[in-house]
Amino acid sequence: MYVLLTLLFAASMLIYFTQTNAALAAWLRPSSATTASTAPPVTPDEAADMALPSAATLPPAQEDEPDDVAALSMEGAEQSPWPYPPPPILVNAEHPLDENWTPEELVTIQGTYLKATPETASALSDMLDFARAGGVNQWVIVSAFRTYSAQEKLHERKTTRLESQMESEADAEAQAAREVARAGVSEHQLGLSIDISNDGSLEASFGDTPEGQWLAENAYLFGFVIRYPASKSQYTGIVYEPWHLRYVGTDVAQVLHTNDWCLEEYWSQYQDWGMGSASG
Image (cartoon, rainbow, N blue to C red):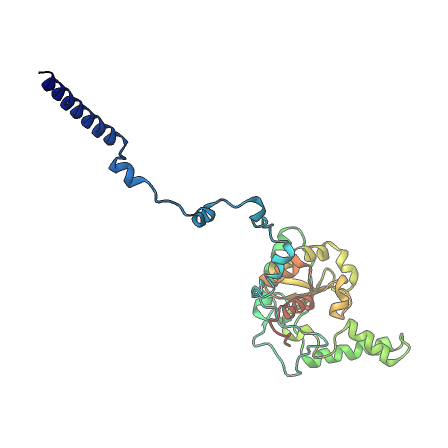
C-alpha cells in the first residue's frame, strides 16, 4: 500500500512539472507578430552610416549670392528691344538731302500760300485751333516748305550781310550756316518744318512771349517739337530758334519731350542701342 501511494504521488508530481514547464516555455517564447516586426541585427558599418553627422562634419552654410555676382551672370543676356518708335529722318550738316529730293505730296496750309506735307498741315491747323480756343491767338506762319534752290539763295543772302560784320568771308560763311542752313541741310526741304511767330519776325525773344511759351509747353501734344532749343546747340549746330517747329508725329514728340532730347540725341540713343544709322 505504501508503495502504491508513493508511485501515485510521483506520477502526479511529474504531470505537474511537465505542465508548468510547458506554460513557462510558452510565456517566454516571442509571439509571431513580435518576431515579424523586429528588425534584423545592425552591423557596425551600418550603424556608422546611420549616425547623425557631428557639427564638425557639416558643410558651411551658403550665403546669399552677392549683387555683383548676380550682375555678372546677366552679361550674356540678350539686350531688350528698342523701347521707342524708330526716329524720323534726320537732316543736318552731317546728313544732307540731295538737291533733287522733294516730299511725295504737299498741300497748302490753311489761310496761307505756303505748303507742307498733309500730316504737317493738318497737325498745325489742329494745334492753332486749340491754342486760339485757350486764348493764345497771335500767330503768323512765316515759312514752311522750301526747295533746295530757295534755301541756297537764303543762305547766300545771309552770308553777304554778315561779311561786313565778320573778319573774313570764311567766318561769315560759318556764322551764316549757324543761322540759316545751307542748301540740302535745311529741314524745310522736307515739308515737315514750320517757322511761326506772333508778329512775323523770327527772333530769339519770341521764346519769351505767351505764344512762344505755349509752343514750348504744348507743341509736342500735336506732334511738333522745337527743333533747335537753346540748350542743344552743341548737338544741332544751329542757334536757338524758338520759332522753328519740326513735325515728327505725336509718339516721337512725346519721347523727345519726356527725355528732353533733341533729334540728334534721339538718333544717338538709337545708334547706341545698335538699331541703325541716321538717314537723310
